[in-house]
Length: 399
Ligand code: HEM
Image 1 (cartoon, helix red, strand yellow):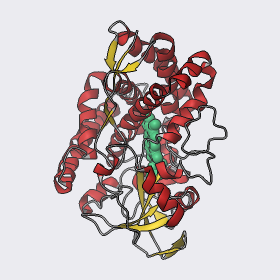
Image 2: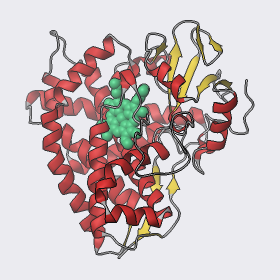
Image 3: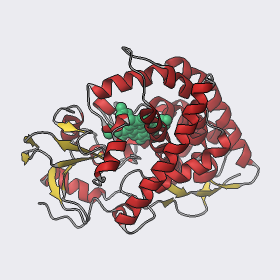
């Protein structure tokens, strides 16, 4: 066991940013290390880029199904429910499900969505423009992904705040007591599924031109999504798509505000935006970790991992790995190549990556044109979390 000054599984360890010093130390001295958990049996922390790729590309050895993809061990009946979602499955089962979803999440739909995303970015920035100040996290960065998810699923946009509040409870970041966090999270998950079930019923009776209707009708080799699988997918989109994109937008802006010359460079040459967004993803990766479970005794990074052990991969650490990224602690908006793995890698590579990139590009395009002299009114306020680095508030002023 490698004694660390920080507990990597504690949400309190991330409130002042990612503990990059600890990750650097681990990558150098103990890249696969056994870490204790306050209320768990402990886990292997994988911190080097190459080892993380090995884990993520080998689902037969490192399973998402066996113990789920979340760090905290869920109670057995909750794990059964989680396994209805693709995030908590392995091939070949996962492959079929992903094909079904891809069929509905097709390029035509993403192209159609692009115009709506652009229009909405314009609307969001125009709405705050005259005020001279806004909470970028709640007024812009949080609104965009929720709008897009409601749009693709055909959910009435008025319901977005209630659904977002459920995802916040599911991540359990506000409860100090992990047992209470888990109980409340499971209750919120059930409410989310009930909403998804009702939506599914409506779409079955009266299909519309939206992803939810396509998804319910999609078929691969005579296989359709079950009701439970549809509900799990519905929940996954809100959980995976909202706070992640909000985090990217907020940390992205914060990085630029910290570096006025870089912000000016981007204003002068907006064609740098795509590489700048990739660098934001690398430098302030929105997702901290995902979990796998070893299905057999296996060796990784010189350690013997036993069957049944928890294996946790840390994305912010991989994305600062000095053996892959030159000057890895430097934020460079022209970095190329930039093979960050903020969207994961392999089997479960993020389904929403093209959407997240579109949303971020259009919000920043509008912001660079319309908001000037941007300053932070208060320091960025991150949520308490060990999972998705959501931002509560980012209050800014501008002309
Ligand atoms: C900056 C934004 C985002 C980041 C950083 C991000 C990150 C990730 C990561 C790291 C995974 C891999 C999980 C694993 O290996 O177990 C993942 C999976 C996933 N993401 Fe994203 N995500 C983002 C946005 C989105 C959006 C906008 C959506 C949809 C609206 C979405 C939907 C999904 C889904 C459905 C999966 C599961 C895929 C599977 O199991 O095959 N994500 N995401």
